[in-house]
Length: 157
Image 1 (tube, rainbow, N blue to C red):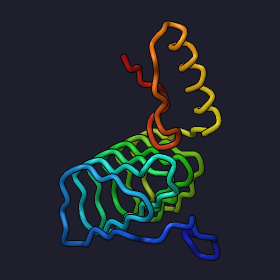
Image 2: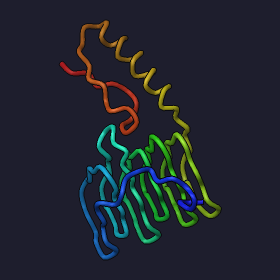
Image 3: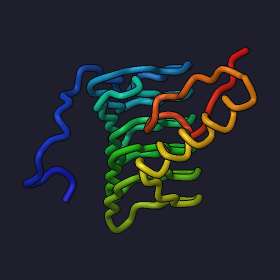
């Protein structure tokens, strides 16, 4: 479980937030991000990337997380949106809703919120339906990056 005997998601760790570091502000990244310290802000992976966020047992995030792949053994206070895979290790704690496509959860992990399974194909179909409905009104729309942002559309005048 948790990495033993499995194939990697393909991203290596490119950025480390050390155990004595407190970072205040939002983070956008691609590739691999490892958090041993504390982040006060939202963490977002680039749309369409195969990014991996790893949070160690000492790691803490106060904000929403939007990534394709998450390996969590620390704490997140906020909602988590993982479009591909979530691994919750034994010390993982999520105080918020967890939106996932595939989840692996060890004994001892906690989610204090809702677990919401989201099928990526269904979400893509929902966005297309919403887009068609809005375009019929004559408003141009921009489609968000499927899988990292919340499903829906953004109207642009």
